[in-house]
Amino acid sequence: MTKRSSTPADAVLVAIDMSKHRQEVLIERPEGGRRRRMTVMATKADYDRLAADLADIGRSVIVGFEATGNYHRTLAHRLLAAGFELRLISSVALARTREALHNGWDKNDSKDAQVILHMLRIGATQRYVDPLAAGINDLQEMSKTHEAISKVKTQTWHRILTHYLPLYFPEIERFAGNSRSDWFLALLERFPTPASMTALGQEAFSNEAWSLVGRKVSKARLINDIYETACASVALPVDEDSVAITMFRMVIAQARSLIRQRDEIERTAHALLSGNRDYQLLRMIPGIGPINALTILAEAGDLRRFAHHRQFLKFCGLDLATCQSGTFRGRTKLSKYGNARLRRTFWMATQVAIRQRDNSFRDKLGRYVAGHGNDPDRRRKAMTALTAKMARVAHAVIKTGTEYRPFVERADTRWKDPSLWSREGAAATL
Image 1 (cartoon, rainbow, N blue to C red):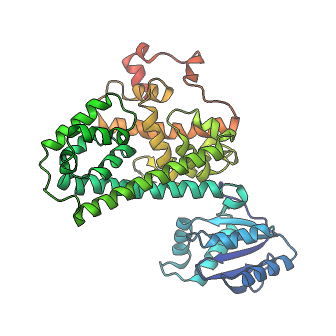
Image 2: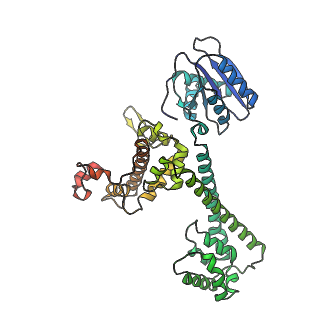
């Protein structure tokens, strides 16, 4: 999608209200007259018939529709393959326009088709980018599947930490580490209760746990600490062969399976994109790892289609908006009318970047919060500004094809070290 597109005066306009099983089609010729209305079922025969009817018109055809789940994808791809120009209608804009035109919230398929036709006529549309035609369909499927698996894995991990461990082995949680610690789950799967460890004795337990713990610094000390923790545990005295422990092991096995699936997606994504120049440029930016880079390319496609970084910020919902009327002026804040996954990805990348040793993002955060270290509101605003900067940098490195350069502003003679600023000058800059 890009910015608002103009509609040629001599084009035939086709408005389609999409749904799962049927589409309402409204066709209007430029010379006026009666509109043609059609109902197209979600079948190959009807799709082919619609494409043939539009081709028989023999004039430039512009098709507009509102994205409806994924139900619009098949028909949109069929019409795009037939050579027609496709325009996307914003769901929010469609709802507001319908209320303005009809002075009410009442809606139906025929009314929506009329509103889509009106928005096509005035040019209040966006260019539709088909993921399959743009070559990013595989990236989108990997990115969305990785997100779905990560959400389920996080839920399973929390279920283990908040339900099973407090009952059957509360003290072992301090060894858990992060949710990627497969060795911890492997140890729990083999030894789900303290009694299952202490029944073997310290030496036998150490021999069995040695291969499960993996490569750890001071592995012998770690295994010894776990055994001593099991000896002093206050866990419920549940037998290892009980149904409850069987359920516990089943949840652990699910968590380990999800970790393997997520790791496999990450390896596949890296193997697929390792030769992609855009992927390589994104990976050079602090905070952007393989999955963040994958998500950016999957959700935004080719960033070069955004002529200016402000267009990309608006696409992400990172543009500023202000509600103003008469003498009233509201707070300026993010519009958030954009791609939520991209916003979240850039926010997470910024969180990683500011924790790294030395880069321009961490340096800029220091300048933003200088003298206001205990002000959480100022830090929140600084993180928002850094998130927008992360998006601008991602757009810039891909559009220009240049590698990320940390502290590029230090090469500018106008830049001064923050420690040399006066308090008034720093306040004015902030």
